[in-house]
Each structure stands twice: as C-alpha cells, then as structure tokens.
Image 1 (cartoon, rainbow, N blue to C red):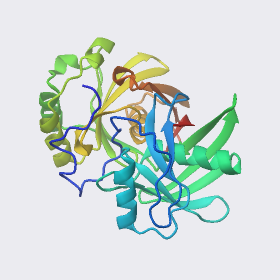
Image 2 (image 1 turned 90 degrees about the vertical axis):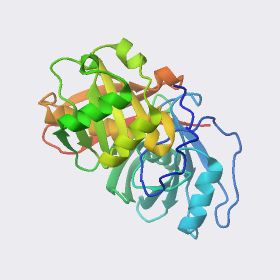
Image 3 (image 1 turned 30 degrees about the horizontal axis):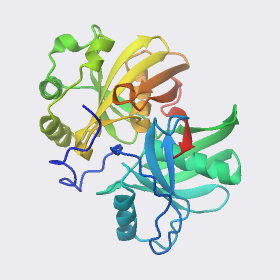
Image 4 (image 1 turned 60 degrees about the horizontal axis):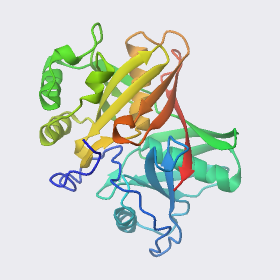
Length: 313
C-alpha cells in the first residue's frame, strides 16, 4: 500500500463525512485566488519535516465564501482536508473542514495546522474553535523554536466491537483472529467520529497490512467507521498505528488526530488509563511520512488531548 487515492472510490460517497484522507503528493503552488480567498497556507501536521506528517490546507479568513466555493477550493488544493477559519473575537473562531469531495465534521490534523498558523501570526495562546463536531479547545505554545498545538477532543466513548463487526473487518483486512494481540478486545471508539480499534500482536503484523480496499470500504460505510485504527503497542508509552481510510478514497492516513483521541478513549474504557497517562502514537512510517502524535488521557476527564507540531510546506 502506498497511500495514494484509489480511483474506484474517490467521490463515490459524498454523503459520508470522513475525518482524514492524505494526498498522494504535496503540491507546491502557494496560493489560489477564489473570490474572497486570497491566500491558502499549506502545512504538514504532526511533524517538523514537510516531507512527513499529514498535509492540510489552511484558509485563515474564509469570510464571504459559501459552501460551494469552499468545496471548489478544497478540490483545487487537493489535500485530504482544507480548513476554513471564520474569524471571531477573543481568539474564538468558527472552523470548518472540506475534503476534495465533501465537508468533514472534524479533522484533527487540520485543526493542529490551523492553530499553529494562528500562533505564528498572532502569537501563542489559547484558542477555541467551533466546529460541526462541537467545541474544540486548543492551546499553543513555543517549545525549542517549534510551535506545539494541543487540542482537547469532544467527550470520548468506546464499546466492544460485536462478533459480526470483527469478523467482517478481519475478512476485509485479510487477517484471522491470530493476527490480534492476545488478551485485547476490539472496540469501536468515538472522539467526534467512530473508529474501529484493533490491536495486533507484533510490528511485523502491522507492517504486513495489505487489505481489500473495496471490501473494507463497504464494511466501514455500513458501520459508520471513519478509519480502522490498527495499533501495535511497542512499550508502555509508545504505540505504532496505521489507519486504513478507504471510505475517504485513500488507502491509508499518515496522521489521524481524531483517531488518536479515540484511542485514548479506548484505553480508558478497557482500564489501561486508570491514572493520568501519556502515549506517543507513531504513524505513517510504513508510508514514508512519519508522524508523531502525543495523546494525554485523564481517567477523570472523558475528553482526550492530542498534541503535535506543524510545519509550512
């Protein structure tokens, strides 16, 4: 799998509202003039290397653009999501996300990118974004000459996957239950979007991911999952993750902030976050776009914090 869009699925399900779908290439054009929009910034999120992470477009003033125009812009930019800021007062803003084919309710990596862009322009501090998924609080700071953004998710939930859900997913992934880590329970976790969470028994199994694109897309569409989050626990503080995203027309996502928050909710639900816990999620390595996401889980707070850097492309 190479992370490129699958031509048989792109644009076939515009009613579906996915979280992420990474672009096959990083465009170098620095701006597009569509009506009121005069500048589109390009950032790679959850990385300090523009060759890594997950690229996003960022429009810091979308005033005067309607939904149709935003959709055109997002399609022209060609990234998985472009974020459109509706400026407010006191660092409180509206924020919406459009993929090339549809509006997206919430996008973690584009939120991080937008927050970093605002911090670079206005200085670090706290931000509040009103999104279709709910209110998202983001704190921005400068650490070692890099701007770090820390988003706090909507309240998370997590439930065990049913036997039928698991069987259908494993069949599309071309795996048997032997691929799964022992003494773990597959869950469907939510942090603004639904994600099936599967823990596999080794890094080798994770690296072997090679699924049936259309079959998995059909399973995910029927169950309303945004990604399937396949993870391997390297140690108590490090998780390696891969996120198939065929419902978005993309083979794999290199950095999935919403799924990382859902993972935190899953860990809390299964009793593996009984105290305050920090997990580093490493994603995108098998795609050649390494991403690092920090996940902070508090057993007394149903929300989960996800942190990362972003860099201009």
